[in-house]
Image: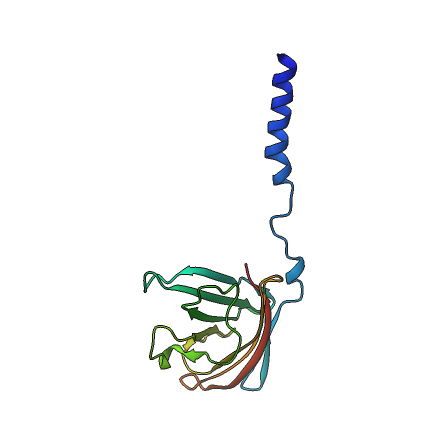
Length: 172
């Protein structure tokens, strides 16, 4: 009986301990993430990322599935850029929709349109949310959890113009 209890205890320990020895933060497919853009002729490059892809029901429209991606990029000097975009009413999608049919949140006319907005903070503390611009998703691969695309915007309120950039980022 003592041998049986020891064996069960050993098995229990293996079941609990071995899975916890794995690497929960597998970033092997995310080693080549980048995001950069030019604003007023100056290049900005991201150093770190905290990106997410949400697949689920739209909290504002019950029963309607949606995909929402948040790209959060931070530079070494403390600046950041966040790009938020969504794909409502995608029943069978594993990733976000490719193409340039994204409209800015300011121009949305239907709850089923693919929409986006930008938010940024410069190292000098200037920060803004920008609702006008362009966003094109050039590829989205659910196997590698990678999204690539291009974007542009002008923030005339702060006279930050000519902003254009590209990205290839991984999501959780």
